[in-house]
Length: 155
Ligand code: RB5
Image (cartoon, rainbow, N blue to C red; front, side, top):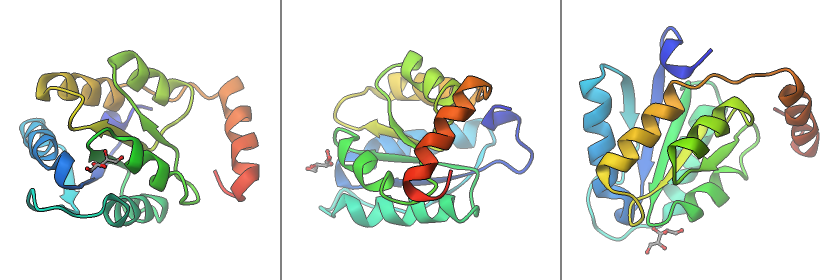
């Protein structure tokens, strides 16, 4: 089932200073779509360290307090590296709608990472929409996830 169809859908949102503006734009998009979310910060463009925000969001998602998460830094790279260190997290850095769609269909990504210095607000919205509306296909992909999970002891 895609995230948008999940009852009680709630997203965890986070960024550093370089992702702050795009996070505000994604937050506005989520409000327009009546999608519930919690904003873990950053709450301004003042310089901060992206691992602090990646860890907060990733831990909250891994603990099951949120359905999924969205993390934004300058490139999206730092956020994805950190988030993927948390057990149970499959964070996908996406720069296109195709990547977003297939990060859900094939990888069951539970965190979407975006680059605030890479994407326009419109591109980021389209990518987020593709991510939220694409379901995990399971089948042969579930077996691949299990092999991934063996590395950390948890899917
Ligand atoms: C901050 O300047 C930048 O390094 C950060 O936002 C991110 O792009 C790191 O991956």
